Length: 290
Length: 161
Image (cartoon, rainbow over all chains, first blue to last red):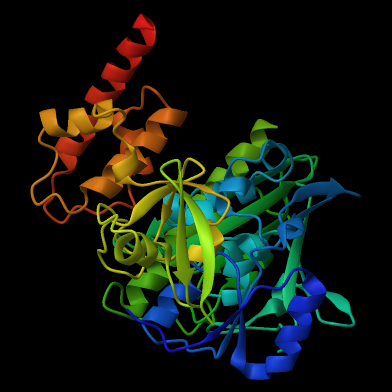
């Protein structure tokens, strides 16, 4: 439980953090809440030579609304999101996802930005951010850009962040009227990670048919993904049990499904379908309630 | 690259020196002899190392000592006041809510935070809040009973005062 030796840096502002990251190239790593990176370092699965701690960048801790969008600073903890009254009203999928993460100790320290940048294939946030068609802000010394969630998750523990870019914020649209959301998850009994996690947001039209549905899935493949075949199968359809079931059957289509000690690929695919159907049902129930 | 810092632990200022890899857990145990905080797994799985930072439960094995500077840290040694056990400690004794006792300090600190935010938790609320704290002896039913007992004790003493 002793990591490889490393140098520790605690920049005073974002500019200094970006400069350090650019300077160290592949040997530097950003530390946010430290609840994924630090265990990995102790297990020697990660051995950065330079650790750049964002702990003093308290201005990256915020949740605010502007122009129909919610923006969340990268260092906002899971607990802050879980308990935000703004989010409960304007984007309830996020607090619902936050409360499923890890345990109390993890939620008190772990951050949304750290989790997204780490991109664990069984983490919860990627499913929600994908379902909400969110964007992720990446900044380096000289510039800043917004990366759509659909392009952010590249592969196992790999994101579209450049080697010198710091993830600084996340933004998602405010939930529209006649929409409903749900995050459903089967917890791994020991680690609390998602064996399968499905985030769904549905929008009804005036005839109370499904205008659109978006579905983010985690825990199933090497990275979280949008279940586009499910979404297409639902467009314009009546929200009947039969239609949901038929659409959810596509939940793991085209995915290289994980197989491990806890769940074979076949079982996981089945779970993905069942949790997708249930998440859609719950989201629709809530959309009808409005 | 050792640096000297001061931490606020159980209401006292304590000086420690930190290397880049010094965790709050190792500072407490190895430098300050506060060995009530337990080293269970060291990798964030078991929560035996739980302390309160500004009132909220944290894993000290994943918390760097420097990030604890400026925060109020409470360890199990700071829970009893003036030689009197805290009701949560008393309730754990009365319910015999442990076997080997290794998880107990972390359990008690997490339970303290729970009862502060929720003075009368249900079984489900206790299970949900305490889920990160592992007891390998499996005394969970007694722990739940102890938390209910502590809640009753704390509510009745709140009425008296």
